[in-house]
Length: 331
Ligand code: GA4
Image (cartoon, rainbow, N blue to C red):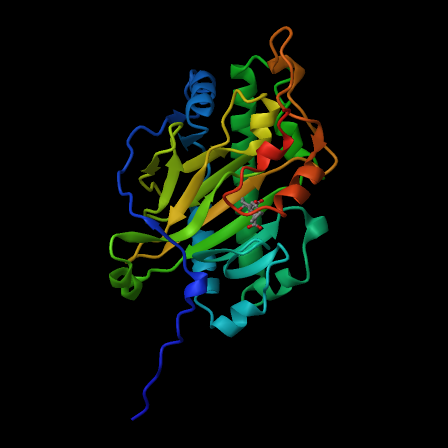
């Protein structure tokens, strides 16, 4: 008889946290077709730095096609997936996040949305199904980028900022440094017993460095956001909507009026979670400082001057949970 042994689990690649299960029903839901959307968006960005958008106009087909392609990729034998890694930062990653020792119960594909940065690894990523997978990513990214720009334009209107495209032009710029990520959080039934009252961390707590992030997931729980008082609440999944995060850069552009939301993902023990996230960032050379029109008379910037390139380089020297913006606050 042949006994197939399970690959031994490397516990240095496992991170747990205290279980928190309270599902939160207070996430702002913004109907993009409503005339009041701009004011509700501003309120949500100030209070939570997080909200859900409905009536976004993206055909469901774009999401289902890409999700199916992502699942096909994550179903490949490990040795095939490894050919698209390790992430530098783009490519396939497994359990290791970023370059400084962060780990999570996750595997992922990270892409640049800028064709200038497409690395040779994308050839391995798309190898199995080159045209279908590549088109599914391109269609999806173009559609969510439109949603992100529409949201940013409504926000500019709500804040009475002129011109209306003050934020969105940073994402529309051909040099915009935006990322796209496909995440797979595998189930972990056999680990569950060993955890006794703790949860497996899929993606540890962090804020996103960019301007805005647009997330879509399958129907599996796991995403949590931190409230202003630091308590964690679970975001009920919704496959038809997008969840949007304020990133560190939007916090700076609004001189702290908007909050870059701390969030994390806990692995679901029984079901696999698939998520796709577009991170809208500015061009590398962009100076990140509060827009003059958000400043009240006499108000000073809370931050030192820096370019997006400087911020990103600094971010890649930090650990996930670090307060990255703290290094750029005026003392
Ligand atoms: C968090 C947001 C995005 O997923 C990401 C992440 C990036 C990475 O996975 O390569 C970082 C992380 C993120 C912030 C700090 C650094 C960089 C891992 C890490 C430890 C793609 C991004 O832009 O910043």
